[in-house]
Image 1 (cartoon, helix red, strand yellow):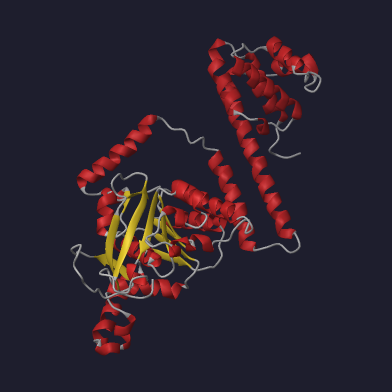
Image 2: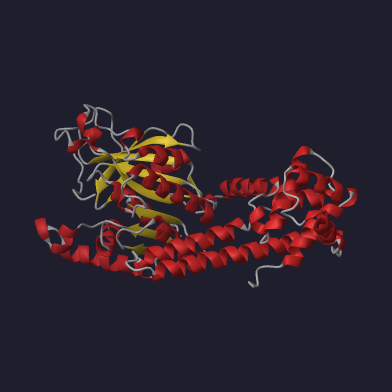
Length: 455
């Protein structure tokens, strides 16, 4: 017999509910509504709980007689052992006042059984011939275990908890410490328009290849990790760690690879001096990069939880990019991408840190006269658009119009803003030195900016 099965505890819960008078009616209702049939290991006890829920929903009084009558009318009296077993349960209950304790014990037993089931299923999957990715199996097990852990918390809190959090944020604004509660991405116009990003935001950055999605993410990584000293977890599913690291370091040092190589008459010694000074900043920087390819959402969530515990929290999670993640059902991309988007949004809420997910656009944008993207251009856009708190589209006009007056300019177009009215507009940045920098120009002014072709 499993250590997580206790027939006597189940009987005590059901007996105490039967015996609860007016003094304990609230505790009885809490137990009836808070317990589920899966919390009971004995089939007869599940039938009894089903009857108690019916009586409670109907507003009927509950005692031995009403319970017996309801079970009999449902045709289940023989299945529960008849009137004699119901009477025996009530008779053997030692204390009605202990009902909340009995119910809590029952929940703990049910959680233990669920954990054993998850682990046993995981072991069976690991032993299956031709099992897929070991890391994916482990990630699934960790995600299932996490769901059991979070399920033990009802998630319901008193309103003062929310008011306290809100007032803490207001006080932080007044004292200039708002970035304890908000996240700044390092693009000044955007940060001002949004007033910083919430710690539970799911931010999607869409764009066609070469438009600057990765520049957006590395600029945010530099700001959060170096300027704000908050831990960054960067999942680079497309580029290796050295390429992502190079972009962040070169932008921080304000140099290009050409300067390091001494090309175009650049001052090579000065460039090497800048990168040398910059490297001291990176030695203790809380920036962590995972460049494994084809990670599933379960694996990303498992690694994020691990790093969250190890570092005492995360400042931001970056995923580059969403459609590169392993699909649960490659034949149904809409379903798979939807599961990924929902999983990343839930991760932001669970760990209370923003998640930035880069996303590819479909080719429909190439067929339009105005090639600035919109939300419907997101591949498998339905659930992504629904789950995202903020959507940015990255666009460089020179990719289509070589003679544009916006040469060297990256447009960041906000197409959705759930929490910042008025932020849905276009922001302009200079695409320089592997990052995005502020730019000011008149609407009709022609100006060429230095820019990088890699994005």
